Image (cartoon, rainbow, N blue to C red):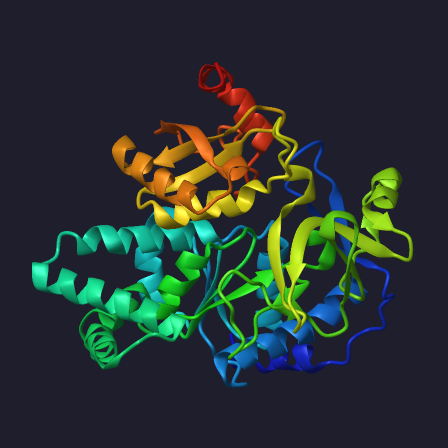
Length: 415
């Protein structure tokens, strides 16, 4: 097929003139609250984004050759998935698509990809799976792992001595390199988007030699607003705005965006379109952010997700949720609840003993002010999924639905 001269001639033929405002696709938002809306992405949006994404991927790979192996398992209803597919076609770069998520490990081994677009949930499950498997390995391997991990943490803090450097070198050769090979022998990096990635998870993958590039964006911004760059990755941050994209902070530090990546409107929803923009054509992302002196961003949480307990404090639940998932081994999902209530509680899912969660939350609470501490929690084996209506199609928490689903449990925790 690749050698078919008629196909090559078709690909190389001059493109027909196109109206920049012509719709290319309509992608429906996941609808964490209210009715899902159709985001209309135009020729101009896609024409702008493809070369930007191409340049970014080539910088991550450290090379411009088009024959990188790309494996993709996420649904193509995600704007990010769609852009990765189109970018591969734009680069004449083959892409391998998963056909059965139950066989993901086998498919990854067969595909031997150089990079993969991921959601944080899968990366966290890989991390937990590796650490669980290590507990069954010989004691000598466990010691090397723990010493290497401790040495890495000291290196990150700039406190590593000669013994730490030696421990890290041995762990990298004997343990870390083998873990990386099992995850993906030819992986050069991973890309994460769709939801916040825990700092601990990002540092863990960096430790074993797999950098994670975070990408932040929305369907309405043609999937991307910010991206990490090589040699400028900061765990927990999502990089700087892409070229041509303007940003500023609005009320409550909401990120506002303007540029050629921003959509023109929702399909047949004029009122919703008007509500999505501030004066001057700034799109309201709905995300509360921090910005550093170099223009990098950290996502604090959704502005509309802010919890205001009866104490009157504003609490972003996402950082607490990420901390719980990232530090308590076995906890897979977490939602923090407490708006209008006297204290915060949490609903957790995962295969973990309650005593382990108790100790973990107690330790996390020690680092938090009183109004951000988790006072009670409920541990359940019932995972949040799109099928039971507790997650959106792209695995984001449907907070109101979860709160209603566990109404009786919450009632008991607040008695």
